[in-house]
Length: 370
Image (cartoon, one colour):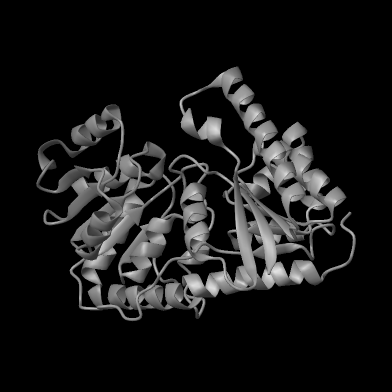
C-alpha cells in the first residue's frame, strides 16, 4: 500500500475543510492510505484576525505544519505529499514543503482549490513570483477548472504536469424529473453579499408576483437586515429567510425547489458544492461564469445545462427567472442535462478513480522536477 501525506485544513467550515473531511472518511483503499496533517489551526480558529496578527498566525501555522510533516516522514515510509492550497501566504508553506519532500524522495502534488489562479500566476509582484517558482517544484499541479488548466499549461514548464480534478458528490442513481413551474427559488450558502445575494433578492422582487425566494444559510445581522430592506413588503411572502439549517434539512428544502440561484462574484469562489447538489437533484441552476461554474454548467454535449448571468446584473437574473417560467419545457431539459453531467463527471467514485490514477501516474514518473 502506498502512503500519502495530505496537508490540508483540519479546522474551520470552509470548502477545503469540507473536502478534507470527505476524503478522510471515504477515499482510502487497498492501494492508497492517507495520513492527514492540518495546515491551518490558528488561522481557521481565528477567522476575524486581521493585519499583522493574521500574518503571524499564518507563519506559526506554517512552522507547525512543517514540523508535523517532517515528523511524519521520519516515522514511516511515505510515497506522496499532497498539499491543498488557496494561494496567498499558503504558497510559502507549499514552497517549503516541496523543497523538503524532494530531499526526502517523496513525490509532490499541489492541489489548487481556488478560482483566481490565472490572475495570481500572471502577477509580477513577490507572491506571483513565489507562486510560479513553487508550482514548478511540484511533480503535479491539480486545478478545479478548465480556465486555470489552460492558463497554467501555457507555461512550458508546467504543460505536462497540470491536471483538471473537479470536486465530487454522491449522486443518486435516478432523479425525479417532474415538470416544474420555476416559481420556487432557493439561495443556499453563507449569506455573503458578494455571492450575489442582494441582486438576487432585488430580482425576485421585480419578478412575477408568485415567484418565491427561500434563503438558507448563516449570516450576520447587518446582511439579514439589508435583505429585509430590499424585500420590503414582499418579506415573508415572496422572500423567506430561514437562517442556518443542518445540511440534511437544507438538502430536503432544496428538493422542494425548482431553481437554485447563486449569482456570485465572490473573489475566492472555486467549485460550489451547492451547485453540484442542485444538479444531482435535477434542479435548474442560475449562476455566473466564475471559476469552475461555467465548466459545471456545460453539458456533456457542450451545450448549456444551466443559465449563466452577468455578475452584479439584476436585469440578467430577472430575465433568467422569467425565461424559465415562460419556457418550462426547455428549462426541464436543462435540468435533465445537468443531472446527466453531474452523474457522469462529478460522481464521487468517478473523481476518486481520477485521483488514484494521478497518484499512480506520479509514482511511475522518474524524471526529475525542474
